[in-house]
Image (cartoon, rainbow, N blue to C red; front, top):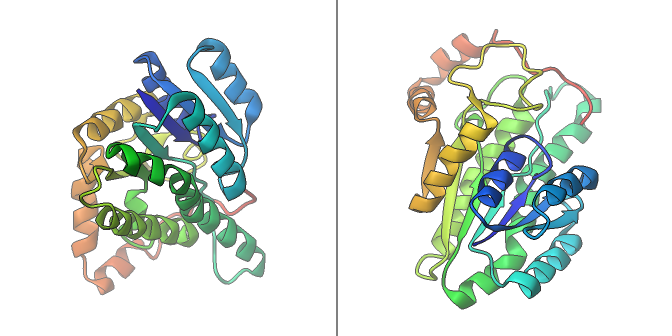
Length: 252
């Protein structure tokens, strides 16, 4: 099996890469921090292909995709996992750059990750493109406007892509995680219900991917919470969440 994972140097991406490596897959591990990818490659020397660059670099992504395809053939699974989160508030001019970076990485980075693999996967009429979105994309969360907007955009983008590839043999899988214990969530100053360890989240997501589901929330309990949030009328949602604690603002 050939698997591509972006954001593979830590957190969920590393857990996903490890899961597939431990099951014998060849993995294209993509992330900015090359030294962490090299550590993973040292553990699985014949299985890991290291590509150290930012997912916003479409030219580097195209070169990496061609290299991996040349060595391993068309991938069976491409997981666009790379993402960032930081607290943002529209009223602060200094947050404009954070908004831009979150949207570029979480949305355009996903597009750039998939784009160079689609033709090869179409040619063999198989494979799965997996986008890691979030339950944060179901409704706008105060203090996380950039992140919520990026994940809502990712969900819609993935649905469009799924319809575009209908009948091609290439499946599109949208996964919306709840809370996962990673460096990105360690700074959250609020309760995180149903939080999963990264390796457990990866195991559950791999099961969803193997089943080829078009859409899934992990863990399932957060699907219920997400449906409830979407059903709340605006006046009630606003009242309940207007005083909710915010993710800290800061630099990416």
